[in-house]
Length: 104
Image (cartoon, rainbow, N blue to C red; front, side):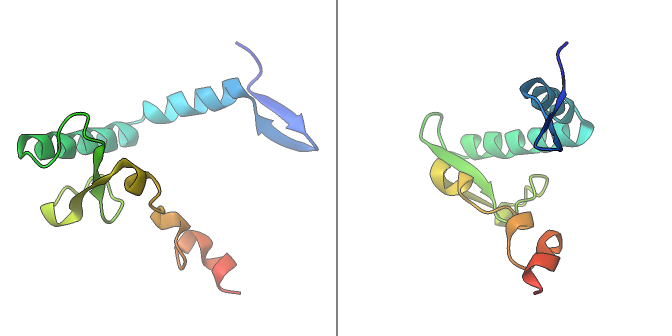
């Protein structure tokens, strides 16, 4: 096992191995597993209803960005580009995360 952290310019930063370890730890957490299972369930439902097909370049978008909310009113079929360029709720103006930055 190599180094997980390094110091660059006086700041402590993860190395490539450190990032990999953090990624693996998150992906194996109960929260990540539940969200992934919910996304897969939404995709399977859309395939069985004929809304999407394997290899068609379409994805199932959760309008409110909550992967556990699989209500039909919250799901829509969009292109891969549209879905992956969608801003996360935490990055939107007025988000609690960015309140101090936008409140100026």
